[in-house]
Length: 227
Image (cartoon, one colour):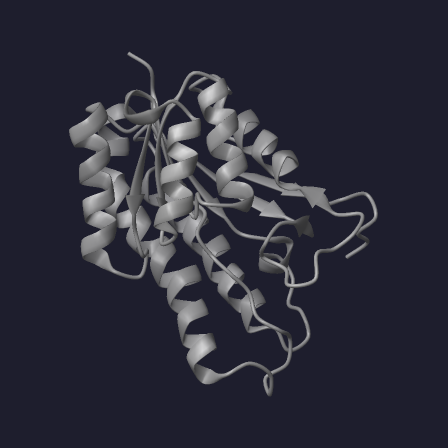
């Protein structure tokens, strides 16, 4: 039976690219995001309900994250890989953005990742599966005035905390830490950046390793990015 790959933030960017590469590699996929129309279109293009299901999910709502995992198990009977990828950014500067935007970003990037881990762990223990989280280069070094960077430091810490908790279980944990990527994350799309497919290939590299190999971190920058 083909393995099952769950992805949050799957409607665009890295999530969408990973879904396409996962299906090409033989996975069935569970696609979670708030953008229902885009999700449904993507699921149809990936083979419909036999290969891909779309589940509207706000990762900041525990009931919705639980329901997404339940849908995966109801439809496919197992869960082998879970990719906590949902997130978004903010302008640098502690006098930029609104407090409401900050709240939404912190809840999505930090609390949403934690809820995703909580929801998928039982199924990943059952399958001796693989947990992946999208952190960032910004989760390895502080950036001036960047609350976004602080959220990604939190994701980096969660990845290591999960790895330690799962030690001896056989479940692998990988942090994906991209530099600048040309995705809808940016209002002004960058040039000389990574493509979403570049990051998706890094994800697939990690999950394609033998069971005794746990690739804990993949830091990936475009060659033009110095910091």
